[in-house]
Length: 215
Image 1 (cartoon, rainbow, N blue to C red):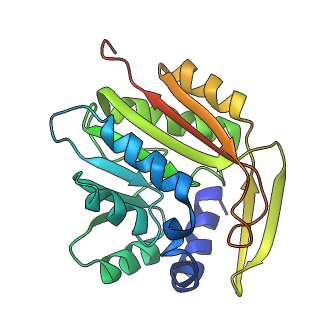
Image 2 (cartoon, rainbow, N blue to C red):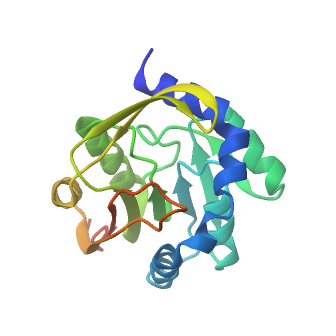
């Protein structure tokens, strides 16, 4: 089974439990809310969409929309997408992969990827970042969050469901290197401690990067 197949199957199994646990997670994460607001404030003019890649049940997509941007969600799991549509019927959500985004070059003003790269090996993180660069317009922004470190944690059970998932941590310096190699200018890179007990006790990393106006 490929990594994408395992992730899709895993989150299909997790969909209902995941939404029950995490749909209101931003209420517990003040820094995440602040970063999303700062991200939206810096988006280029023009009204292009902002994509929540790895949107899960659509709670961040909806949050972005409520901040006033034309937001859409993309997720690898069909059941997550179905659930997002049920929870927010007027939300634009579709099945897709960040390794081959179904969007034209320069189509989007922004991409938010909150913990959606955490199952990707380094080579595929670079592929995803290349796709982000391709579909963003000039001055477009990407916001990526992930677990900071260099370990891999395999789980066979999560939220009471049987899965087979590898959670891959990445070093913030590596993320900056991959973004710059793709052509991005890094705006900010920061870390925070987990909001325990709501979150698992890992160091959290965030990077905001901009596609240059001349790209």
